[in-house]
Length: 202
Length: 118
Ligand SMILES: Nc1nc2c(ncn2[C@@H]2O[C@H](COP(=O)(O)OP(=O)(O)OP(=O)(O)O)[C@@H](O)[C@H]2O)c(=O)[nH]1
Ligand SMILES: [Mg+2]
Image (cartoon, rainbow over all chains, first blue to last red; front, side, top):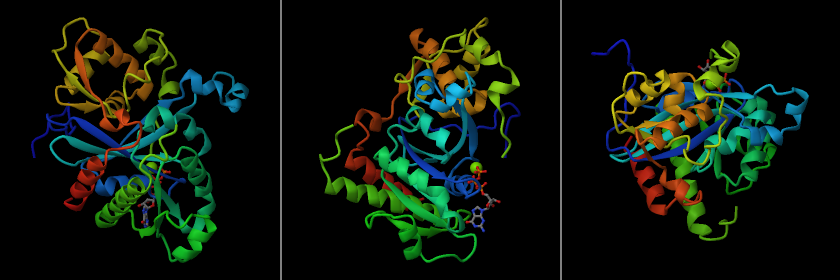
């Protein structure tokens, strides 16, 4: 395959006009980058965001750290959906400071996938709480590193309401990653049908 | 994953590329707005602007520019603002942003169809 040394990028189609976002959140090492990479048409790219001043102002911790810019790393891949639409998939850590850049990066996301390791369920409590706060629809995917608690036990431990889809996944498998995304999109379609105007408040 | 601590490797770099401005452009660009060059780079332009114009010969998302330039997303937005103000780029905004976070059901349907065909 021909490639130039200066540019290894795979560009979008010239007709690409509308980009959509889905965010994968989860604790350290839970498989976020693997999941993004398994369905992405490009190798996941990583970058960073810094907290803008307005958000720094509301972060009490930043006053203690006196002017240290808070930087959050994340990665992403993409899927070209058709001639005009492209879906960006972000892998983002669920730790506290990350949520200060949520609006900067992820306002307007279609929804989120909470990726959990069944051995460390408590790592995802905070993310689930924040997604509910931001009114971002989400599904929960259990990345099966080993046999663990049943899905029913996970649902109970995470106090998930019955309408939130909960599924097993293997982030290394493209078909499994695809299934996670389809589950989220079906959930969004249902949510949309059920509450046409109810959630239009900010 | 190797973390590049951008703001630690060179404390002055962010200041230099943005001319000391801080971001007031959060609303002009979404992180996945698609940027399209409307002209070729010219000699004497800031090197970051040149690289952006080259990348965006094909539509390129703000986050992809950020990854390629190794600059935080909000710093890239400031650079893009210069190019937009001088007519050197155009922007294809995400339609969901215009729908106040509630995507058109037709969009959801099209995403589902495309994912099934993947
Ligand atoms: N057995 C198994 N291993 C997995 C699975 N998904 C990911 N892994 C492995 O787990 C490790 C961590 O995966 P990553 O995708 O890097 O996790 P991450 O959430 O991006 O990690 P951080 O970005 O460091 O927080 C890697 O070695 C993966 O190969 C899975 O479904 N099953
Ligand atoms: Mg990762």
